Length: 153
Image (cartoon, rainbow, N blue to C red; front, top):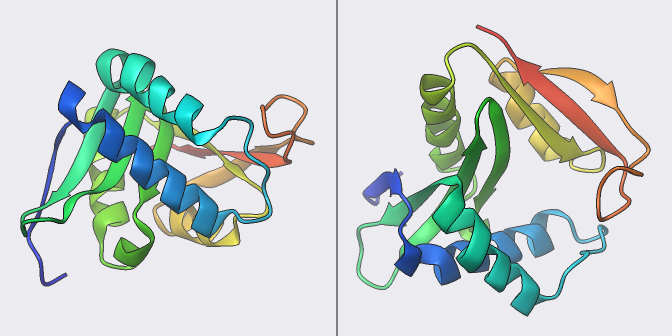
């Protein structure tokens, strides 16, 4: 990575940028998965729930105009969200977020990802996560088959 990127806790002013990263990343990485909520609903959720009430982290590029290029949400021992701006994939940001998540939850982590997201499977498996449960998707809003991964130190 040639640009300086800082990982920091999100603040209220980051909510719109965090939602935008989520929206762009989801659209790029999961084009076959139907979203359960509109863009406006996603932005309101990040503004009203995720950023103020959950442990939300951002990757912020130091270069002017770049802003937030990645986001991660932790919920106790669950890595509930990790999304990067599409043009920032493959630059080590995901690795940094996972290292931070493991540092914050040293006894272990769990996460869910869609079964169609093969790149995510490879990424998490490379970081020591193991597939522990497969579902038919009836328990998620998208009704998309998913897989639960766990990491134990």
